[in-house]
Image 1 (cartoon, rainbow, N blue to C red):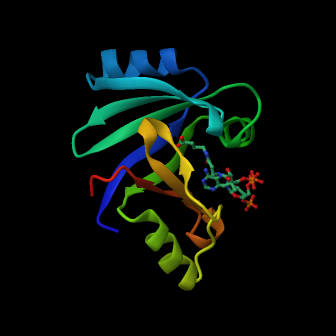
Image 2: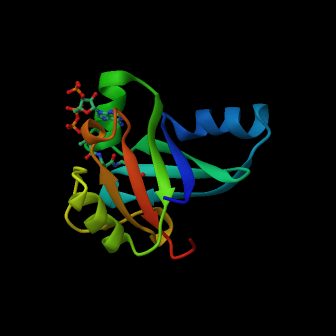
Length: 134
Ligand code: CMX
């Protein structure tokens, strides 16, 4: 892995969280979109070398809704920026890492994404994020 692309933060309400990140902390909003496949609305914020991704659940289904229900708001995942995501997934699998899917999925901004199970990553949910820019 060469770089962290973003940190995902689960929030109940993106507008309330944005008021804090933009107005109070003085960071810049890059964009908001819905990622229906993941049941979330997301906002990307520029945080220098990496981005912060706020994740608000769309309804009660999906990983982020479940996360908030069980643990409350907070850091949900860390995303590595990668290239050739399928090769990366193969390499990791060979090294005993448990992937959460066989094929990459379509994520925010048209990126291909895949997740590594926190159980095989020392308690951290990692995402591989391939936007073809690494
Ligand atoms: N970070 C660290 N650990 C986590 C976690 C997270 N975000 N979410 C769950 N866990 C841990 C739980 O604490 C639990 O551990 P224990 O068994 O020790 O209690 C274990 O993983 C199982 O958790 P669970 O609550 O029973 O949840 P599920 O098994 O139903 O799902 C996971 C967990 C990671 C498999 C699921 O959230 C998933 O598939 N995530 C990948 C997709 C995703 O997160 N999408 C949202 C982001 C979308 C985006 O970025 O666009």
